[in-house]
Image (cartoon, rainbow, N blue to C red; front, top):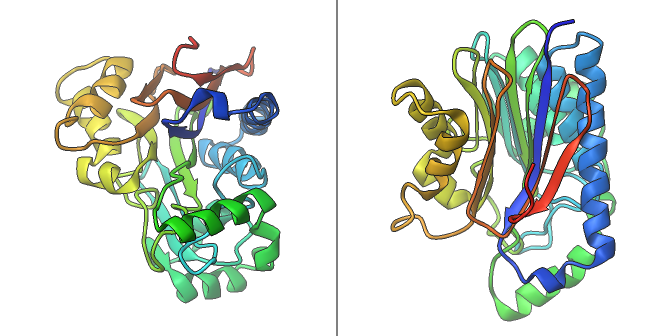
Length: 304
């Protein structure tokens, strides 16, 4: 059996460590474990990297512990708006969706766009129409709203500020040597209607190329778009000859005087080497090589 690898993130953020309860930490770790297992199950059977990252991200979209799909943030109008993208590294095919509502698993819609649409990127009602054509599962708004997110949104409205930039993502290498990346987000709490994150932006929040690496980003989307972080990892690796881990770390620090805020990413190269880069005290992350012991961490001082 040839090598296969899955690596994921469940969001990077800077916050008071004491505010993360033991129960919440347990939810994060269990959610990361479930996502890795879902991706591993696909890869172990010889499935594609595309299907593996889809499975991993779906697991997190279905988990209210993460800001993607169920449990996603509410915008300024109290609505759920989702962004997602998936990219495969063999032919550089991509599918992206933005500002979509009612879609149970936005990453599945992004995958459908990549595989069945003549366009690369669909938004809003057009994306929803395509989801209906492809017979993807829809849900009522109440499915996505948790009591915790509703309370936080109400507080954000009263105080008129925007935050909560957790995002989920996965990168994978399958037994055929193909790479893929997928990213999905519920956006920022209290964001303006129509705001689009970095997640569906090719080279911003998501990128994959079999020759070099696959990358999925998390953090403050506006910063990630401005820094083109996913492609920056690719460029540092391909053109500067950086090792993947060093390129990942360098990317989130390269423009620190200009891009001041939370950023994180997970990267994977054709050798099966995994890289994590983040400038936050929390980065929910994990990986597994050949389906062996799952490596999971949350805090910045945890080693993998």
